[in-house]
Length: 62
Image (cartoon, rainbow, N blue to C red; front, side, top):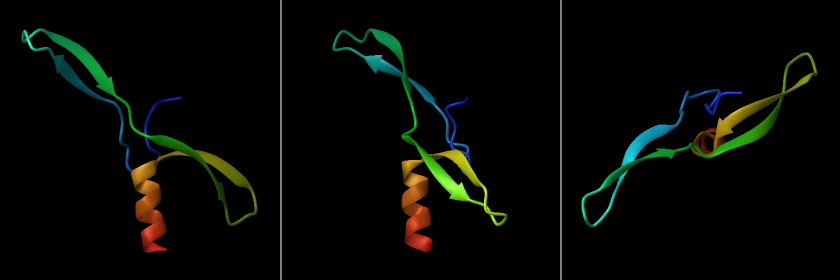
């Protein structure tokens, strides 16, 4: 399963760790994904991977 938010499509970002000697090594920043159960209209439940920031926005707007 991909490390992506179901609603916003947020995924991993790539950057550099930069040392004091200016040595650069690659790093990945992964999104803060949470597994959420969502009830559909027909009564079934589906598990979705949603970013925590998206959950905050959804909670604020409901």
